[in-house]
Image (cartoon, rainbow, N blue to C red):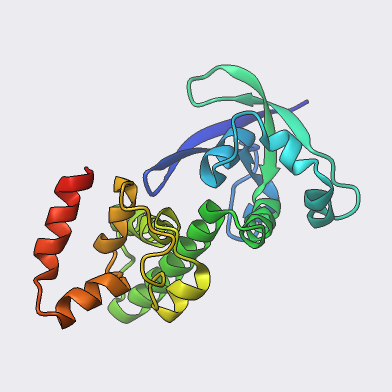
Amino acid sequence: MEVMKSSQVQYGAITIEVVHDPSIDLSVDNFDTHAFLTYKSAEDLLGWKQYSASEKIQSKQAKALQGEGFTPRKNSVLDSRGRKNEMGLIPFGLFHRVILWQAEKGNTKAKALLAAAAADSFRSVILEQVSGSPVPLEDRQRKIESDRNAFYAQYAAGISDQEWLEQSGVGSMLGLDMGKTSHWVTFDSGYVPSFLSATVTSGKDPDEILEEMRQKYE
């Protein structure tokens, strides 16, 4: 069994391991089949339980994504610290389909990944063509994390896809638990629920209302 090479890579603020055969030069054309994500990285990216990736990948639903003849693989990998380990690996081409499958199943981390990846692709490709210069990697990483968190914020606040698309709030705050400080991330992403609109209509200062509620619940 060949020894493959592992590299630690940043995706926004998440550190993942990308594995490939060091005798093959990775390119955009062979990346989907010759670059692999470790099971642990898949668990981190998709919010799966620890050591659950193997079970997920071998489930009946996941096998339907993989095509005939695919079998989950473990390879001997030289990790980023120079140690040799057996690692479960997922080809990136398959992982793309896994993200779509998980998003359809309602996995909020998968939906946030799709949103961040699409935003990064459009923004980076368009800006490079308009400006003539590639977007600096550190700027892309920063925006990927921002995009992912902003999209994920709606789920932390109990806001459905339909409500988010319509920007219609949560119906008299149904679905929002104001006792959970994690819900406050929604206000940082520009989302304005119906109760804030009501405070403006009544002549109250929404910033004061928010500050009172922060002090009460944080």
